[in-house]
Image (cartoon, rainbow, N blue to C red; front, side, top):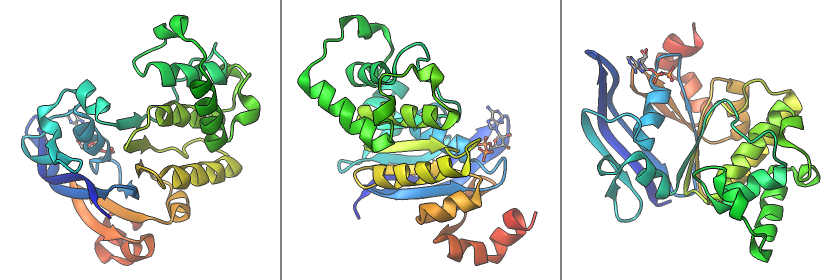
Length: 246
Ligand code: ADP
């Protein structure tokens, strides 16, 4: 698997506190990766570094086959490289239909305003159908997004990110607040999404991570404590001590 993202030797200090400490993680081109760790381990800061929200004091963040340094790019330039981020809270346009939400995302990743100028083309309609199928909302396309369940809103937002065709999708606790059936759907959705792009999932829920059935990186005090299959990392004594044994 070729490397898509290479974070190496990165450190971040907030007011003298080292939140990220010589962190190195690399993500493959069509890899599904779970990043776990106790509160304060540095998971959010890790994603903030990739998206350019937080700038490290040292280290490198290299992207793609040409090893572009993301540290030289602005947040919007990084997004345009094909890096999408899903925050915990869904931010869909509640008054618009599911179809309109997806159309807006396809038309203009920056905001809702271009919807006025949106013209339905064959390609766009076909792509909306494809994405709706991928996120399991085909029958809900005409519904207002505000009428969707919490889980469905999360899937719609993932669909809106997929519409922008990211090469890397960062997803923050996608299963939070979901019913067991919704979790199962979310697992399948993320596994499928990772067939054609890299997906990094930050998650607390171990059962959810188990179902993702992917390589796991355990963070602790801003560094990698263990990496490998979930079975492998959960047998690691350091992991048991700092995370599972709490
Ligand atoms: P996680 O997402 O794993 O819970 P975070 O990345 O949010 O961890 O935080 C890592 C550490 O950095 C924590 O100790 C947190 O309090 C600290 N931290 C995060 N952001 C800031 C900030 N803007 N200013 C000061 N400290 C911060």
